[in-house]
Length: 566
Image (cartoon, rainbow, N blue to C red; front, side, top):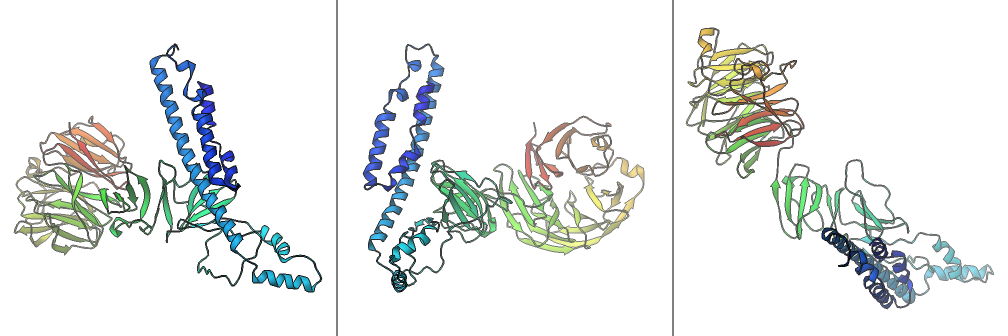
């Protein structure tokens, strides 16, 4: 069996095949060469028959099937090699024919006449052609492809004529030096023709190392950043930073092309610098099949009655997602980097806090802007509506909590005042079930209680002891102190969320882990289930309306992950 494989591997001999490029009748010789391969190799008993694979062999049936499949695969691979080699031979034949045609048609040039005249006056009995030939032969003869057009070589027996009829405004590059590897990857391939394909600047280079010849594709007009080779090893796709190519155009909102991959048939997949994966064809349009944020992601809010959630981040993008289809319902770009968000209990509007102190309210159906306000010039870490929908509490990094009265189903806002008392920035907020009390955490690990309608702090332990909280997102408190591992500081856990059924508690930490506890979690160093997936700190977590799934968001990894609750 090994003899059969070795004889088959010698089926394709590039050096023998290329010897027929310079014969008198190259097409008939190539045909005769391939016919000889067919009769001597493909019909050879050493290839298609093997005593070890016969019925009389003791080899198991599975081994015989495996050997036959391996033979078929090797045959298909070599067929592809033959096709590629034949294409290369045809290309070289065309170059040879064009060179011969030019040598037959081209007459003596003006330079040659001048050289002859100078030689005669000096008394030298040497022809102009003999004088010019050594000079031209010292120049490298390279074939350059410009947008797929083969340019013929200059005849070696004549000098270039300054009075030629053809005028090229931009001469093609004879050789390109360098390779782009500092910010690109997967951009170097070896083709069956023996050429190496890569890119530098806006030029795609096909370089034959043995012959030291280069071919160039110059259809791009900006930096080429990605390259892919089709399984047929002949077709090549490239993409550039400007988002345009000879065959297709990517809409500007998707960003420059980062990578290109082949899909089924003529489908092409494109990854962009704005974290989009696009699908389409070169003759048609491209549409996103996957998208996400491009900067740190902190704002997360869930719909009160539908499997939907809302995200916002430092990339200024705000997006409403459908958790069932895993696709965005709508997306919008705002003026400032976003930090926090919160749904109105009716889910008719959603509030978004930014890093600049401004906050916006958007209609969840039309994504239209309802209102915009400004409170201070620090980032707004928390946006939380009261359960009855009559108040909005905004936690700021200026150590204050701003309280607004809400009317008309979240479309009209009146400032009531601000709660002052924290000595550090606000990190988390929660409302009581009856919307009469508010609890807050700060950066210096304080826990304070408030009467928001009067913007007054509650200091009575008897009053706050039995308050029932509508949500539990504060990382500090009696019901959640068991989530903190031994030796951790107050910044290791970024987010806490209690399920709507009040049986589960989830946390996101600085180590890329999502933890799942039982609620209440009042036991020191309580046990939990730990789940990995994020490659950066987990910035926020929240359960969907029916507690069937958990949503977690990432910081530097800019990811959104959906977990099924079992």
